[in-house]
Image (cartoon, rainbow, N blue to C red; front, top):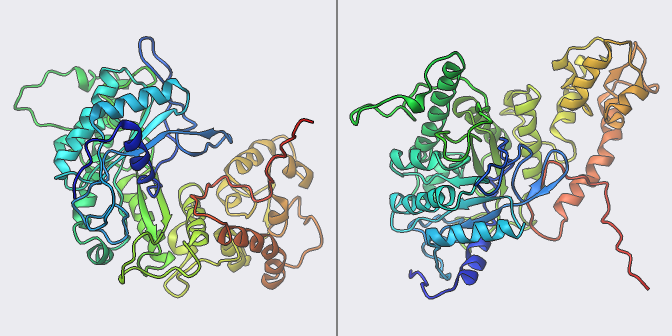
Length: 479
């Protein structure tokens, strides 16, 4: 396996950007940093990635691998050691040049940098650190940077990279240690979780220092330390801090802020036989124990011919991926637990109903919910009500009772919610609170969505903000 060194930067970009397309664990930055005099770029809380922000904007980043050479032979990976593909690698200066030139042309708003493993984890991570350090301190790039932490890397290198990146991620890849042994024999669960734990503890330690700083205690980055002083980043005990990092608006890139946008991970869906229940249990444990911002789910794409990989007669399991994202949203923002959504006896999601509707239909004893009296937590469990609409209801009903036209103005999806709510004791129409009846009414809409997902003509990463009721804009041709 030889690195092609005689390629120009455009040829490398074509190869290494294409090789990065299967890594979906990039999302909005979660932090806000304004432009700074003498520096280039900024990062907005709305986010940086090839996806849609919460406000509907399409946002972009430069998404590349540092190298597609790898010492591992993961059976599901297009860049595995045994594959006969053209291998190449950027230099740190080439990564800097591409990022700055693309930014100046307004092509991108940030950088997502992943990598195969060149020679060893430490060797590769050192090159990545050199690229990011130069980008921050020589090119004065103040934009968003998301970088992959390579399992097996020395903790000191992870720490150094964490001070020049906004977000870090370590891909869990497969939900079980057995799956890793079978399909990724060079990787172990311990090596993957070690940098994840280090990043979590580093962020927690920083949050504690920031709290002390706000109380008048001397900032940690101004404290004098001897050469023998114990390094604290990554050494603090874990502190429950669910996915939120303290962010000081006055700090700029490289100002002693450790992974300010938090960390994320990715799991491959369908490469191994685990159920949906197993996957969301793993995701729930990661959120609770490692304070992750996001768990991403990537529908397995069979890019290699291998007898140990499952056949995909229907193509990548995109609908299953979509249901997992919907359930993940319920775990993070709606107060649900994995055991409420699925169980050992019922291990997979309903293909024709979203997880929230499916849960509500199995718990009709908790409905209908009276909109003018229900608590915020109860409102969140009503199909058709989201976080924003629930907050609006809580605020608006202080001024008087709400009715169905009011709910529609607040963004409530009444075509789903009307079966589960009352306003001042009345339903929107005469409705039978019967599981079969409500299911028959809801399943038509969901069946269309399921068909759209499974019959899409090409593989794509689904967005949580997909709208299946919009049509492409009509392009008018002048006469």
